[in-house]
Length: 102
Image (tube, rainbow, N blue to C red; front, side, top):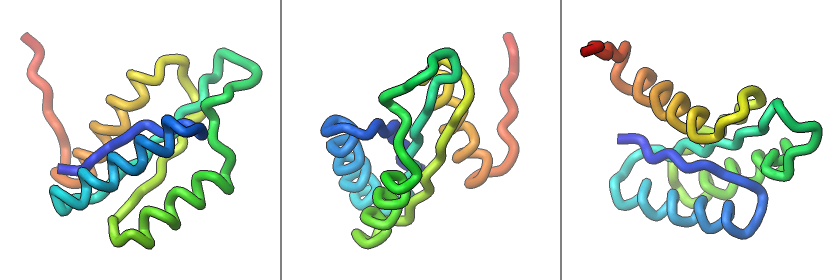
């Protein structure tokens, strides 16, 4: 199962990356790093610069973990963005996902 973490460019985000790398190694699975920028504010401190995301991707790859970095630049709910990124990662790995409504 793919390991997915949300990333923001601060010490908490760096700690999240370290924890994600440890979990991905433990499970021998890829790591998906998601950075989401809200579109309902003019300036979002959680938006990582392209250079920062490239550094994260390079550093994780150098640790021997398969990594994909995803930037989401629309929406206003980080939780929804994470769930949608997780669903996309599952579709890539397992194919179409069918949800039965009750």
